[in-house]
Amino acid sequence: MRNKVIAGNWKMNKDLGETEKLINDLKTALNFNLIGSKVIICPPFPSLALAAKLIEGSPLELGAQNMHTEDEGAFTGEVSPKMLKAAGCRYVIVGHSERRQYFSETNEFINKKARKALASGLIPIICVGESLDEREKNITDQIVSVQVKGCLSEISAADMEKVIIAYEPVWAIGTGKNATPQQAQDVHRLIRKLISQLYSWTVAERVTIQYGGSVKADNAADLLHQPDIDGALVGGACLKPDSFSAIIQAAALSTKK
Ligand code: 13P
Image 1 (cartoon, rainbow, N blue to C red):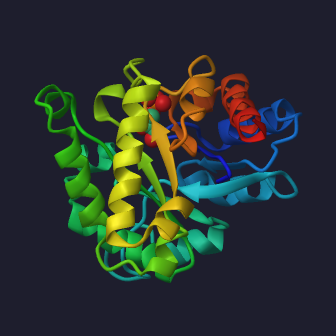
Image 2 (image 1 turned 180 degrees about the horizontal axis):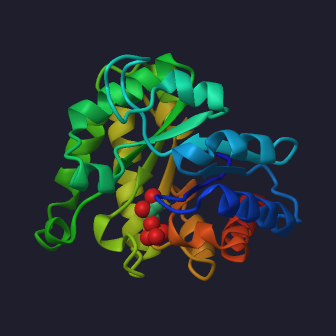
């Protein structure tokens, strides 16, 4: 059985003081056995080094929300994988739909970031997902297939086993509308099948596929019990220690089952 991986994407929230409070409150709330599940927090760039210090000795791990494809150079406003590693990150989210939508990121660029992350010793959390219009036109499978194939281009099988994919239907992000467990399971199955075609079933069975989009304390258990849902990428609910820890507890319990 794959371990569950719960990641909290803080997005553009929490300054340094608020970061300290949120992490300390979260550590207090995590007073149960995680039973093989992993918990990653992804604060904004200015909070990463502080977060790395605060989570020392706790089960929390650190990720960033984005990165550039170069290690250094004249790329004003960008942050490199080398800098993320030095700040204490092990993970990095790439291709979030908000980056695709507001910063015009393409599958090709996201693929470049994912390959660079892996080459730098970071684990990419690669996001894919259809818009409402695409779901209503019944083209979810085509859209997600193109995204998965494009984002995984030229990634070796050995690297692929480390990659995390996050299926985040755009219409479910921040809207309070989550995909039903069955809708999410169907797309997760499709993604795993695609990976089996691109690599092998052995690789596909090892890849972690998270669901994201309005995951909350009250819907997490049903989603996480689906056979191909290996975790969650949580937005709004990860900013509240009680909600985030309830989601983590649901993951731990689903692993135990
Ligand atoms: P919400 O949980 O707020 O819908 O956000 C999901 C998300 O975008 C995580 O990356």
